[in-house]
Structure formats: C-alpha cells, structure tokens
Image 1: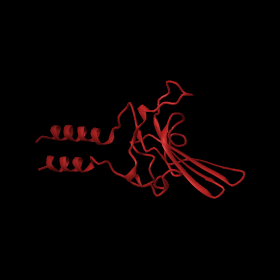
Image 2: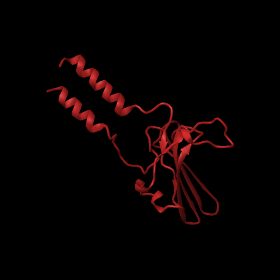
Image 3: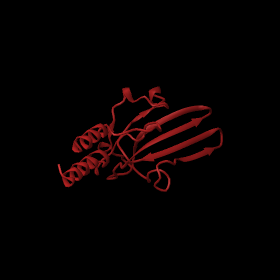
Image 4: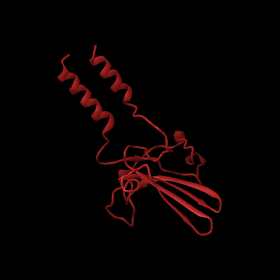
Length: 146
C-alpha cells in the first residue's frame, strides 16, 4: 500500500473519530435530587443520553441547544447536581471548557456552572475519556503498515 493510500485512510478515520456532528449535541439530562446517581461521581448507567436538537424552551422560541451543561449547587450545606442541554452562552469561560463559572452568595449558597460542546456527553464528571472509535483507528493504522 502506498503512502497516499495510508494517509487517505488515516485522514478518514481521524475525521470519523474526532469530528462531531455539526447540527446537534447529545447531553446527559438528570437531577441529583431526583436520582442520586446524577451527582459526582457520575453514574450514567441508568440515564439515556438526550439529543438536544429535540429540546425547546417556551421563553426562547427558535433557540437551539448547542452545548451541554452541568450545574453544581450547594444551599445550606446540601449539594445538588443538574445536567442538561444548554441554550445560551459559550463553552467554558472565554471558550475554554476547563474553566467553570463559580459564584457564592449570602446564606451559605455556592454555584458552579460548566458548559461544553466538545463531544456528546461532555457534561459528565471531569475525567479523561477516549472515543469508542479509537481502537478502530489504531487497528487501521497498524494494518496499513503491514
């Protein structure tokens, strides 16, 4: 197999593995006050991932959800987590998803608001994750050099 074919195959695989769908994002949608598995550490075994293109808000007609969000709130010492689709704002702070908006208030209130759009389900707990297509990419590249 020549170098051009190897590069073509590798490029196609990279596009399949790393490029998201341009029209919608899928996010986790849950509340820890309803299901404790929604808190951190997040256990997504009982939740279906939600296609945000199907979500609408009555007070924002025509607005599309383009991001996922995770809110962590502490009110009077009690933590509550909410994961959902996000309709407004930008990912992270200044476009950097590593940073979340944090606010504290009177009467023992704390809130952390994180938004992301890098991949489906990005509103999970913070941890390193790989695409499920990564093994296919590795296999294809290794076979191309045989």
